[in-house]
Length: 283
View 1 (spheres, rainbow, N blue to C red):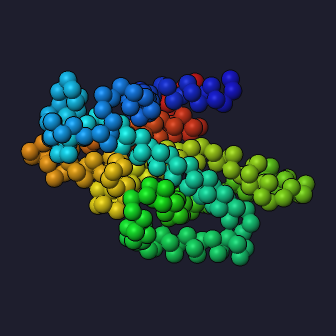
View 2: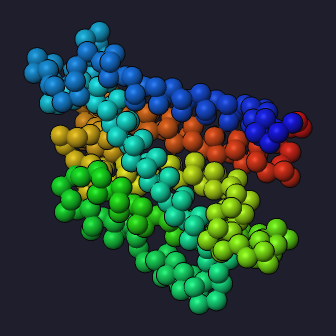
View 3: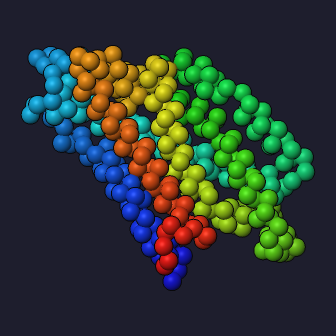
């Protein structure tokens, strides 16, 4: 039995992980194909139905400006997913290269990297991110760049600590004695042997990126109208939670499903990839 089949069988023995995968797949399908099912465009208001409750014409109701909440939720979910996956992918790659490279090179390079990481971890990064994106005019691409710039430090610190033990293995020493360059050793030997940790950090990174984007957009510092994300929908809906509760609960439920499903997936991947875990059952 190859490793992929082994990991797959262990993963699908975790019922909550399977449920999380189903929910996440459904959310992706909604974000990709939901706009074809929507009767209205997300930026096309219906002035005859301002802040109307859910109905056959507007499945999730409308907001105070008459925008269809179903179309806005689909667009906002897609925008949040694009931001989260982009940020998590980039931070996973950067943290893997920097953390594993620092462990393998050692010496002055390792000290410089650790000093930079510890310094950045000690400062309030959320405030810095808020200051940097406040003048971007709601440009979500700028938000991605800033979240990547401040999101790689903690994962890199974790990967560095694990790579310290990996670099003492015989195959890494053999590569060194055979004259394999250290960059090639990092890519070919160190990173693949901590791949399970990187995969789990990638899934948890999506949750962290969604939370950061939602918090910034909720405060008016992230994605801004006319573009929408789950954070902007929550920000608008929070002001009408008593008079028009559907404007808040629809994006809140969508965000909850997204974060909870990713948490279940991360838990299932941890059980499947950890050889010492018993919660995945026996293959």
